[in-house]
Image (cartoon, rainbow, N blue to C red; front, side, top):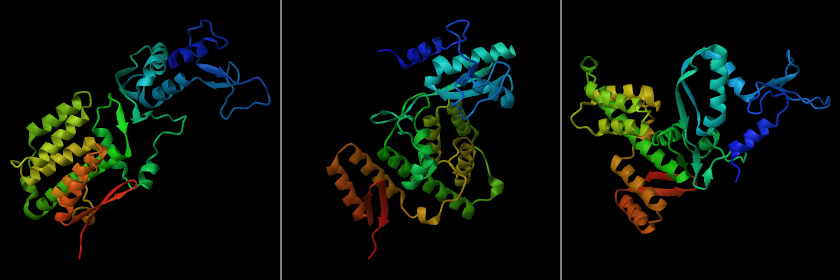
Amino acid sequence: MISRDLKKARAYNSAPRKKNKTDFALWKFSPKDSDTKRQMEWDSPWGKGFPGWHIECSAMSKKFLGDTFDIHCGGIDHVPIHHTNEIAQSEACNGKPFVHYWLHGAFLEEESGKMSKSKGEFLRVKTLIDKGYSPLDYRYLCLGTHYRKRLLFSWDLLEQAKVTFGRLKQNIQSIRDDVKKNSDPRDATMPEDIKAKFTEAVNDDLNMPQALAVLWGVIRNDKLSSIEKMNLVNDFNRVLGLDLDKDIEAGNTNVPQEVMELVEKRIAAKKAKDFKKADSLRDELKALGWEVLDKKDGVEVKQITG
């Protein structure tokens, strides 16, 4: 089977006006047929046409970031051709190193395989919102997997992330409320040893799952005061971008932590097709006065009244 990259390479090699068959195009020419007009094309000293895919990125990078910049991101599929060609043309043009660090992300995949934009299988933020999820629920899901590892997506996994993220916010809201009631801002301290652990995780090739583990460790650490926890949470949020420094709506804070933990376990049991355990957990929740309603795009937790 011919790989996709080899197919691309053969297509490039057959392009006209190349001195060498291994060259890639910096400028592509518009069709000479006068009845065919592209959406974007420009006059140039070489004729009417448009920039090649690779040179577009180098030109924009040079204009807005300079000849050399620190971090360049992209998917792992950009390594063999696109980013390699960017380096070649940028360093030939500028005579300087192009990028100091490359961060190549693995694919976002559904259980059936890689999502494909061409097949209409990619996610939109609006799709998440329409199904009752916050974009931050999805962000929390992404932070749970290292960017170099494939990220498996399903609505069940997103629901688990939403419930866990909700529990995290509830815990932090309780800490924030305690700070408002009982702490003097002049007593604010920053536990530097714990902050260093978070920084170490981030500096370890953006190990965000470990960074989240440090955050949860702060929440559960009984040796820390509420104001110390709050200072750490606010500092970590500058990297995590989860709005953990903001109050959440009162209506979202009325579900006890033990209830949310049982809801998480039930979601995991259903995903594992352990329906007997899922039913048992539902009964346990009812005994605590809470009802779990299964919906098409997730679950709803309601307190039993009357």
